[in-house]
Image (cartoon, rainbow, N blue to C red; front, side, top):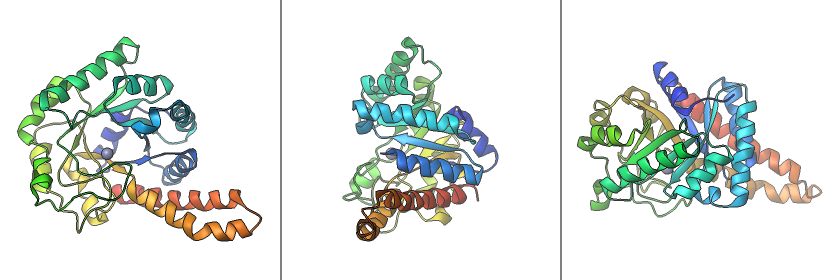
Amino acid sequence: MRARLDHLVVSALQQGAAVPAFTCYDFTTALAVVEAAEEAGRGAILLVAPKTAATPNGLRLITALRGLADAASVPVAVQLDHASDLRVIADAVAAGADSVLADGSSLPYEENIALVREARAVLAAQGHADVVIEAELGGLAGDEDRAFGADATGSSAQGTAGLTDSAQVEYFIARTGAQLLAVAVGNVHGKYKGEPQLRWDVLQDIAVRTHIPLVLHGASGIPAEELVKAAAMNVGKVNFNTELRTGVLATLEAQTGSYRADGENLQGLLGTWNASAKGFAAGALSTLTR
Ligand SMILES: [Zn+2]
C-alpha cells in the first residue's frame, strides 16, 4: 500500500524499529523485497539508483515499482536515491517515486542547502509538494553501485573529514526543510576495509540536535548487533545494497550451470535470484525490528 516514507519511518521509530531500504536495479529483486516485507508484516522502501532513473527504461522501472508498492499488503515507499540532477529528480517523481534523496553532500555546505531547496521548489512547481525529501550532510566514502575501493578505516584523513558535523545539523535542517537526514558516521558505500568503525558518539551528537529521523547508508557489512542499536539513536531508515548484490551474484554464479543444463531454465534461475534477495531482505527486516 502507498505510504509516505517519513510517516513509515516515524511510526517504526515509535515502535523502536527502523525501516530497511533496498536498492532495486531490476524488478525481480523488488518483487523479492516486497514479498519479504509482506511475510514479515513490516513496511519497506524500494530504492532506485540515480543512474537507473536517468534512463527511459529506468523511469519505466520506477513506474513498475510504484504499481508494485501500491499493490503490496504492507506500506512500501519508492525512493530515488542519491540524486543531484534536478531533471532526474523531476522525472523520477513524475514516473512514480514518492521520495527523493536530494544529495548535495559532495558540494560545499551552502550549495548543499541550495540544492535541496531547489529540488523542493522544482517538485512544488510540478504539483509534487508532498514528495518526501531526504538530504545528506557529510561525505560517505565509496561508490553506491560498485562494491570495491571504499576506504573505511575511519582513522585516515579522508575517513574522518567526511563525518557529519553535528554543529551544522540544526541550521541545515531548518534551511532545507528536509524530512530525513542521511549522516556520515563512519559508514561507507561498498565493502568495508576491515571492521566497520561506526562513530556512535557522533551519531549521538547528531541525534540530540534534531527530531527528524536519521538515515544510515552503507549498512552492508555492519554487524547485526551494531545495527540493532540504530533505532535508539533515531536512525529510522537503513539502506542496504552491496550485500544484497553479493548474495544474488553468488547465487547466480553457483546455479547458472545447472539451470542451463536443465533445458536453459531461466525461470528456475530467476527463482533462485528471488530466493536470495528475499532471504536477505527478510534478515534485514528482522534485524531492524529486534
Ligand atoms: Zn547511499
